[in-house]
Length: 319
Image (cartoon, rainbow, N blue to C red; front, top):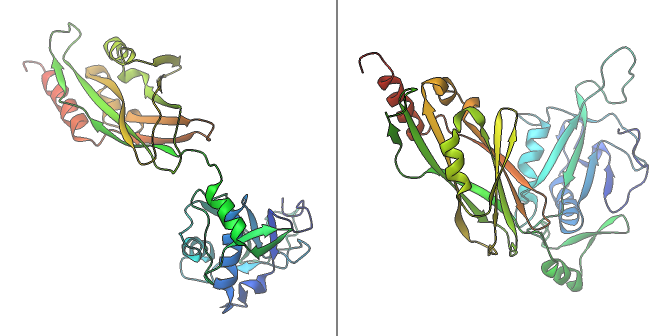
């Protein structure tokens, strides 16, 4: 992939030789300030990639030692990049490309060395100020100081809303039931809370919850579908509930968005006691922003532990 790079710098691509960062194993004194300008420029614009270990024509120059700092060069870069600008950069990736191995490969990266790729996305917190108290932007393939008009443009540009699931909490107490002829069971209710963490109003928001099918009986499904705007899709081994929220979500606002129900009984106790068996996956859709996703394990919550213990005790002969 490195060999296939376009051999020229542009607004989304910057090459820096190894001496930009280190002379042998000594960090160059001006590296922090130089890195700061590049990070500011990419984050304030449309994002891009900074390659460390490639010359001005994109050719590998041997790379950088992977252990310039304790814990490794990559971990050190991940520590210094956020603080290189103000406000601190929150979203970026550092990739460490080490020598290819195998009889067919003759790598230009030296043993114990790597080429580092710093991938920076357009920042929702822009504009970011560099360490020299200036703001930078990628213009004609160079990182240049921004003028007042550019700063105002970045401050006013439209961004996607940033809506995320912030927590899942038990709602109420477990509801034990000993009337089922198949054995004792208990119903658990959880509440998902979402928040608008960005600066933009979210006009349309939807939450998708993927639940393990063995934990959701017909009563659970019925209760969830009673919530307005909720629909169900069935897949192998899982149930996907989607709820649309018809009211705009303001910046900084959080709401209790959706309740979901699980049922513990003798037949699924093993799943309730495992992390994989009680993992709930979620995705949030907000206007035209890329979906945000994550997962929450419920096995260690007190309500699940107590419910499992109750079912296990009541299922014993003579209990």
